[in-house]
Image (cartoon, rainbow, N blue to C red; front, side, top):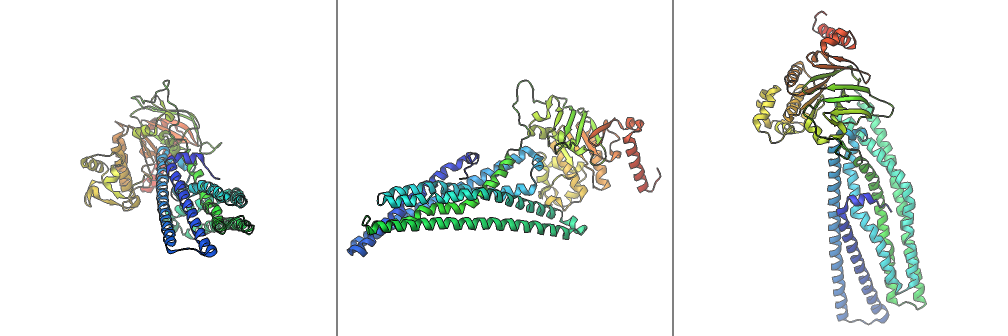
Length: 585
């Protein structure tokens, strides 16, 4: 009946609330039973015996009101504990997901899209909230209520009690039968839902590009197809829900009717009194109402189970460090922090390697450039050094420590990557800079702005309190990149990786960034990933990549003397630049 032990154990704080809800629901049931017996005895006195006085009426009304008040109180408390359970589940699950994303970094992108993460975190958690606050308490109460009623009714009419009790399991049996079909259907539902959300987010983020290339109509039609597929699967889910509700109603009403028939026969045979017969008739439905209500929560619970599978799939992604540290291998980085790669192989998919058996060495405080044409594996190699992805085979070490033995926190302190698509958050310039290192004084933040030639620009506005729009859309591309580099400098790590940091920006910004990189090389380890060879002339070492392999290495001068791929690429780029300026090669 959809009991996920791992899920319940993870949400251990909810167990006490679930237990209290079950207890309070059971007390409310006892109140119902008391009211039924009060009412049935009252009716017997009025209709059969026709003997009742005003004092007895007052007593009956008083007791009835007290029972109603008690029932109202316990149901209010039950609703309160349901709310507490919901709060615990939502808070804990979202914290677990967020903490996991912080630990695995960009690794989640290999298995999940951003839209899928958002949907699981938002709607998926909401479905599990109902699973804990409604479904689980109702499940256990649905087992307790028929047993309680069976014991009480059996003292009046054992045959009727058995008939009613035997009909009760038909509802969970029908739920179990439906569950097999529903699980597959809801899996398709979530798949379609995620695909629709994924395409919607992708189209929304690229809306400007779609308009520029007038491809919005094509994407609109694509979205319409996804929406129609989602509509169809949603209708199938609703049809399944309505059919199962109809089936459960037939069982519930049929079972109640059967109980009424049997107690009527008992009354006709003189085996039960009028009051007892009325009580059983009124209580017959109570045998089935809890399980009938459970059935209405069943579909939500199934959705929650489907969501939990995706949540646990995310939570089970291997983290940056998943080893038992031992005395044989120290994870403390040595003072040299030399980066050494040996026979490294990596691919996002099996049998499709992007990095193919490469070896390299990047000494401390060296200025090393990794160059090559687009798609040769430069950025992938940078992501391996940063630990964003795990190598398939080979060895990658920083100092004395293998990259897989270095925690995410240690790596983030040791290395900073500046790419062409760094993110700036909506807020002030100060808030974005303090992400590099918190608790810095304003003078250090202003110094960082001066280093990237943004000081005058921001001081002519509101200084460090200048507001940035979403993704800093109120800045130019060059200004955004320079602000990201200022934030990276404040981080003050030992190793900096610049991955196409000068792509798609103006010449002035490119010149400022290159001069900053050159200034840093005397005190930091600099790894520059670029396809523009004019920016690598002063590198201490250059690695030329092609098709996932390092095909050449050396200084600019030595590589030019080899007359190999590097020399041809450099001359071709220089010729194009001279031609663009109207010069001669």
